[in-house]
View 1 (tube, rainbow, N blue to C red):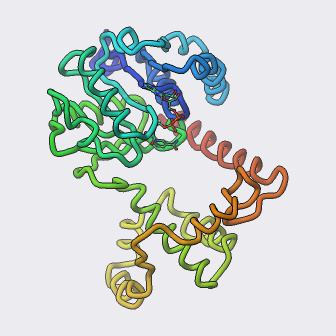
View 2: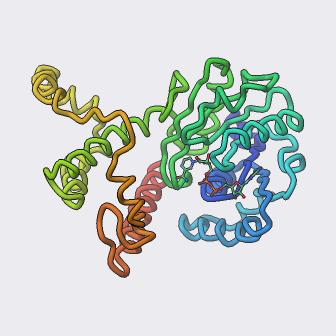
Length: 312
Ligand SMILES: NC(=O)c1ccc[n+]([C@@H]2O[C@H](COP(=O)([O-])OP(=O)(O)OC[C@H]3O[C@@H](n4cnc5c(N)ncnc54)[C@H](O)[C@@H]3O)[C@@H](O)[C@H]2O)c1
């Protein structure tokens, strides 16, 4: 070992589930030099993994040899052998995740850190019945996890400070941007911000103020154009808190406060309008249009990831 960083990078990482999130998480740790043990119970998903991982090699222009660091297993115990961290990316069902964590506790060392990638289920609940609850932590990656830098690291009431620090470190060393979320609350930070905006967007369209296309244009061509380099707190400081207060005093009482899921979503579902996959959702998607949006997003994220890698 040359230095502390290299030593850390040799720590074996376990990944539970090789689906959409799991294969990306396995890839990013392997690309950072870690041996990875991946447990995936579905034979079909296991069979699809080499092709999906190979596609990521192509995306980044990486050396395909890094894939040799990923071992895939149909059983949990051999995949998790000697792991220092386990990232769970199994389906979003509490009883399943609780069962997985109970099985994990039986096969890993007592100090192996157990992290859940749940989008919404508190890790407090996932780890509730474990003996060593101090090593359970939430790590909310964003899709696709190999391209979006942010990982919210959620400290629940039992997570030790040492576990929090080690988790932040291993993610940072792998090139991610981890942030510390101090309370295990629904939606953590990112999804609360995202959904506060969506609630207002649904309300504006429902009230006939503008159509769905206009909402997207306002975000992408307006404040969204600067959001990647200027967060809302920085922006408030930039314009001055005197102006921020004046605006809040006039505006906040008019913002939507609906405390349930928007009616428009139920209505659309009833009509079979599920979005791009059914050709219509909040907007209409003609032939090829949805694919163009997907390609645009993918290209943008890849360009950003490559630019970050080049700078690092
Ligand atoms: N998809 C997203 O955008 C996204 C974003 C952030 C977080 N998440 C969270 O990540 C987790 C995984 O989501 P996903 O989109 O990758 O789902 P997915 O369905 O693509 O993958 C889940 C994988 O887990 C496997 N699996 C099923 N039972 C298992 C078990 N008992 N043990 C191990 N693996 C098992 C499945 O075969 C499948 O391959 C969920 O908790 C989800 O909420 C998803």
